[in-house]
Image (cartoon, rainbow, N blue to C red; front, side, top):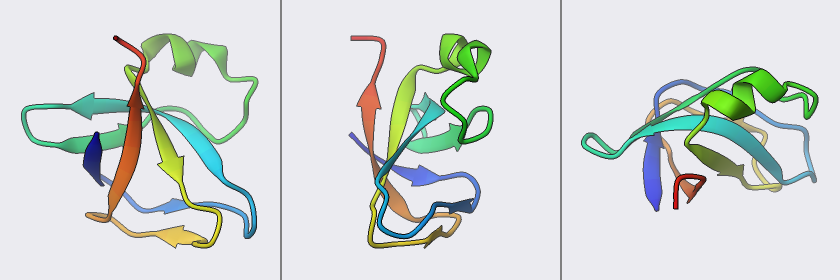
Length: 73
């Protein structure tokens, strides 16, 4: 599902990132939960999706549409 970012996210160049997120399907807005570290398991437990950040873009501004992968289905 495509969703709009609730806040600006940064990612390192050349690296695709999968960030934990909370998607509000009613509004189509996704908010990142926790930081970018893979060790943050409590954030993963609260997440209902993964936010896919493209490796060719370093700054993903508020309102940008991104792909999300559902963790609920």
